[in-house]
Length: 375
Ligand code: NAD
Ligand code: ZN
Image (cartoon, rainbow, N blue to C red; front, side, top):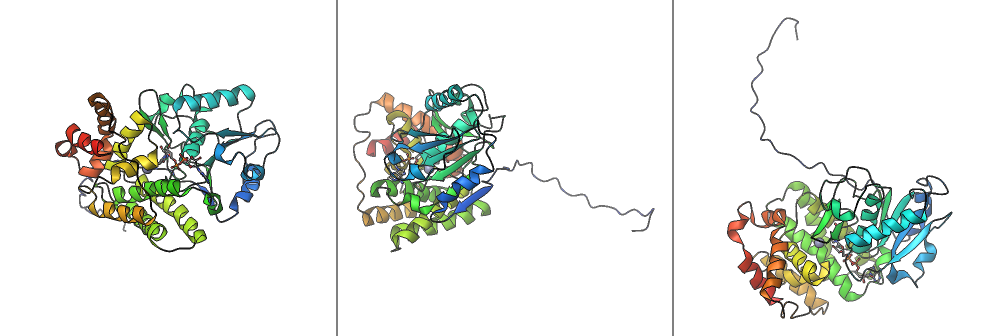
């Protein structure tokens, strides 16, 4: 361009103001049978000093198994066995944090969660509360965590929730069931070792795997869908079909389910879940119904919203001989139903994803109650 010469720049119309999510992904991941045994080396570089332990939160289903012997304990590292019989609670997180603070004068080098969604979520929450004042309940919501968590590692032993990849930790608090959604929640390291999921009982394998399947259906049929979510959701759905409808050998099936869970989690990271999840939160809040089975209990009655997905779900259920429990909501009062409806309808983004911005015109308490009564 010659100096002193000016060009007229065509005016560019301003772009629609929209805030795009800038979400963190797990920065490091190991995948492969036996990769669990690499844990010692991975943690070594993260050890601050000999007084700053690694705390391993481990599902107590492994208490009398071989897995704890393979945990690379050194110095004052500690294993804490935790039951996954109930979904994680905010007071449970607070109690674990207090225990760790009382026992160790230094902040741990890190927290390692070994188990299903319950243990992974506990590990995420504990790592956050070790560096942030107050109770876990104070951080339920979106982007309320200011200080980075201590280094935290997730090692799933059952696949489907996508908790290993998500930026949330879902907790039952005194007032609500809601995640701590923050950039500091996401794991710093994940170890995906498909051998760890080999002893999951059939029903639990189905329910937790269906969580992934339902993530895909709700994401792929949602109004928030975009190419990012679609690319992960389609892959996860394809893998779920192979695992639950194909005839893969056990090892291949485990590998693929583990990756389905990962991709399903990535898919909803940039979109949302939908009707089944919103209503399942109501079941879980009032009755303590666990996430995987709760989703299945609702999803079976959602032909109106997800016709192809529900048909596929029933085929998979029949193929594996899974009978869903009945009469769960039979004895509930109108007040009980109102509570579940209110928890479900509070989850506006899920409904907006499922039914569009005018979702309030399309669904209301009576419709939800009629679905709950079928469960
Ligand atoms: P879970 O952790 O609740 O465990 C379910 C059962 O399987 C438990 O009895 C557990 O002891 C058992 N189990 C786990 N691994 C096993 C193994 N290898 N062998 C034998 N038994 C085993 O199961 P889940 O479905 O993975 O997690 C559900 C939780 O995940 C809920 O609390 C839900 O809110 C949460 N969740 C979180 C996210 C997220 O993004 N953070 C997403 C979806 C669900
Ligand atoms: Zn889910």
